Image 1: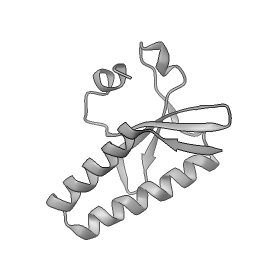
Image 2: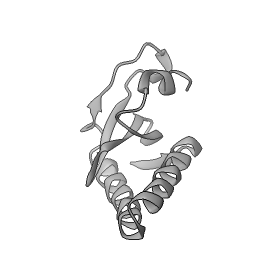
Image 3: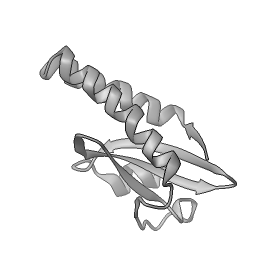
Length: 104
């Protein structure tokens, strides 16, 4: 399946990379980027394996979450359809997900 990463998800990845670079060092930040790439590759092969998530916003019907390998508290939130996976956001699980995702 084709994998599309929305701009908001790209910003999330960059923000997490920047946070890790500042707080955990270059090696951890680089490992995060590698893990995102590896996790997205796995997601493309198994798109329906992510955990279903349910929100009141009808635009999020079918939303799933996929953990970033080695950073399991951070998850890719995505939709599948038309031979495409659309990654909407990449967020830490401690964030206010209903508020963030409702705005989509």
